Image 1 (cartoon, rainbow, N blue to C red):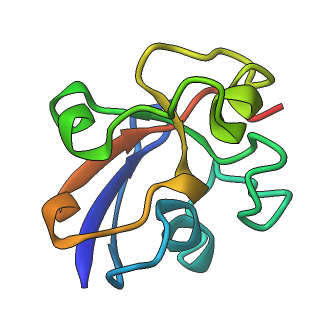
Image 2: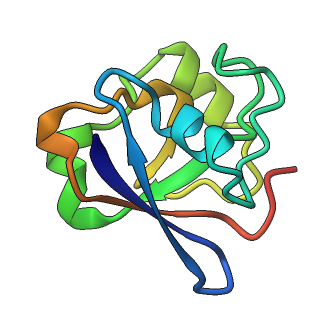
Amino acid sequence: MLKVTYIQYDGTAHDVFVPEGLSVMRGAVDNAVPGIDADCGGECACATCHVYVELEWLNKTGLPPEGSQEASMLSFAAVSQPNSRLACQIAMTPELDGLVVRLPEDQH
């Protein structure tokens, strides 16, 4: 199990343990973390699992490839930033143990 810390917009932190291979979105949904709506269920079709990856983790998570479906979906996110990702597109690996993501104020 790999640790992910989800930080809500108000600063409330939720430490969750996610199995390797599961997405950051699935970890949040399975553990009832507020702020991840995941309306499409992880199909990269809605942008309601938008997160901000803490800068020190960006070299490990990477950014969405230019022109990808994820990049397109992020254009629909309420407040996209350079460190924005869709949590459904980040699969947990041992290198991501301890990952910290912040949630936007709203997903819609």
